[in-house]
Amino acid sequence: MATARLQDPLLQHARPAAIYTEKLDHSEVSHLTRHEQVLPAQLRSGHCNKLTAYQNIIDPSIDAMCNKIKCLLSPYTLEHWLQKCPATQQQRLAILDTTNPLLNILTLNRQQVTVILYARDILS
Ligand SMILES: [Zn+2]
Image (cartoon, rainbow, N blue to C red; front, side, top):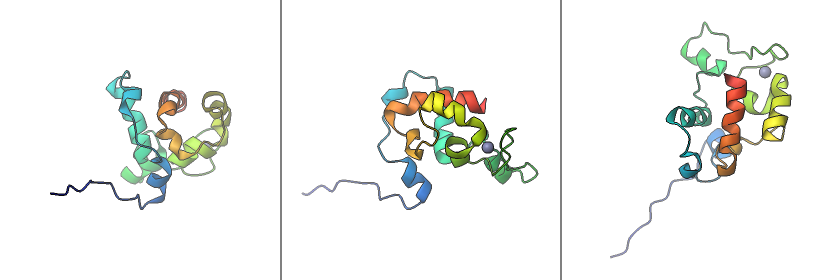
């Protein structure tokens, strides 16, 4: 009897396809608390209550725009927070070693702890 291997289909949507370029190795973050592991999972989904663009979906009375003093340019989405916000450009350079990281930094196993440090610094 032949056995078929199950395989996930290719991701159809642009954001998940850009984020999930490699399989997550949860052992890389197993030393973190559950609370520390939740934030990057929320960011990968784009459904993070620390992002005003997401808050605006839940409650339209909340302004979706970035509220950083040096910014106020666009909705505070995952992409804006991680790649584009001019107000946090220096923190990205200092912590992530680049001002415009690719979205897959959220799933690169060797970068997960670094992204958590950046998230704590910017989103807290
Ligand atoms: Zn901004």
